[in-house]
Length: 260
Image (cartoon, rainbow, N blue to C red; front, side, top):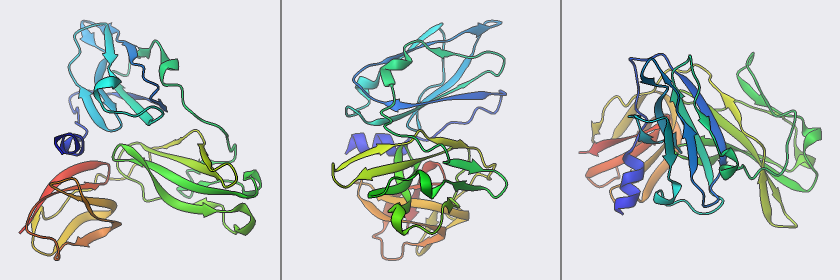
């Protein structure tokens, strides 16, 4: 229970005092740690922040080398990892053993792209194999979530999808499920920065309706880690919830609220 709360209560920190860039690495956990070279510029660390699956690991760096110890994070072998390194724009850190988190990607769809003009994801039906089932997944709240069921290529009539983007960097991938072999494989993720505004909770203490400043995906969790409600919209009815403290995943963060 403490472990669950420790994970869901952590959210990304903002570093407003610096102009920064981001390195994002996608892979899987294979029981190994990664080692990062951290260059210094005029005595200042290049790395400003390291996050793994949206959990902030550190924001203070006093050495040219840094170890990300995955063994302390409770990951299972093969679990998806998104490592993000915020750094000064005039110098770039480097993971010296990137093969330690080599991604387990089994297929590619060259036509799977982000169309900036209409702000949509698109793919070609001809690139999908018959007899296999496809979904679109979005990386949010530290894990991959299915946001669109594409289905079987034989029955498809559309090949575009307009996601509900969150603030900051958005990642999407296509999942392929082989019905005969009963296994799943994934494309390399598409990285999108749509420029959407950060969404906030309007009334963190409420008896009936929890409101947001804009439409967002959400997931409400009670103090025991039980998921109480999921969905998307500009508000959510919590009138039936018992009084008390709750956590809510929304936009790209986790915050608490009180049901009065």
